[in-house]
Image (cartoon, rainbow, N blue to C red; front, side):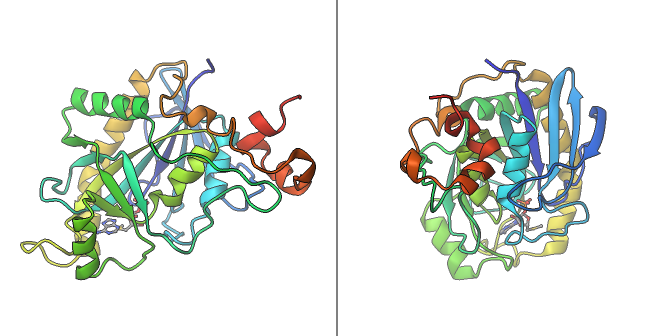
Length: 293
Ligand SMILES: CSC[C@H]1O[C@H](OP(=O)(O)O)[C@H](O)[C@@H]1O
Ligand SMILES: Nc1ncnc2[nH]cnc12
C-alpha cells in the first residue's frame, strides 16, 4: 500500500489551514483549467497534507463557477489518496442544530450547470456512486470528533442544489420529505469527480442554519451563517488536525472501492480513444489508461 496523503478542501469560511509543518502555497497546473487557488502543501506529524480553499482565498468562485475538475485533478497530481471536504450546510432536520458536524454518507445531486465528469466522447467510463463516501475515512473523522469532544452525527444525506440563491420554502419542505439531512451547493459534482479520480472522499458538513423550513427560525440569513462559520472555524480546524494526527500512514484500501473505481469502468475501445482526452486524463486515470498491456 502507498503512503497516505490527506487532501482537505476548505469550504466557506475556511480559506487556510494553520498548524501545518513546513508548509508553502504552491501553484499546480491542470489540463482541466484553473483550480480555485494555489494549494498549501505541508505535513502534520509526518503525514503529507494538501489544502485547497474551494472558493479561492477571498471567496472568488461561486458554487457554479468553481472548476471542480481542475480542483480534483490538482489533488490527484499532489498524490492525495484521502480527501476531506469541509463544507457549510443548512440543516433539514431538527436534530442537526447549527454547530453540529454531520458526517454524511449519501448525496442527492440536483445541480444542473456544472461539468460532472472527466470522461466523455472518445473516452467513456462509468463508475459506481452507490457508496459515495469512504467508510474508513468517515470512521477516522468520527473517532477524531469523539476524541476532540465535538458534536457530530454519523450518516445522513446531503442534497446538493445549484444555488447561489437559497431554497424556496416549498423546495426546503420537499427535500425534507425525501429524508435529506443537510443541504449545500458544492459537494456535487466534487464527490463524483473524486470517485472518478480514485480518491477516497468524505464530507464534514458543518451546519450553519435551518434552511428555510423551520417554523422557529427565520429565512436563511448570510450574516447569521457567517457568524456560525466564524464561531466554528476553530472547531473544524481542530477536527481536521486530529484526523491528520491519527490517520494511518499507509493508505488503507477502501471498502467502497474508491481506489479501484476505474479498474473495469472504461467502455471505449482502446483504438477508438481520443488521444487528446487520454492525455488530459494522465493524473486522474493514468493508473489504468497508461498501464503497459
Ligand atoms: C456561505 S453559505 C453558502 C455556501 O456555503 C457552502 O459552501 P461550501 O460547501 O464550500 O462550504 C454552500 O454550499 C454554499 O456554497
Ligand atoms: N441553507 C443552505 N442551503 C444551501 N447551502 C447552504 N450553505 C449553508 N447553508 C445553506
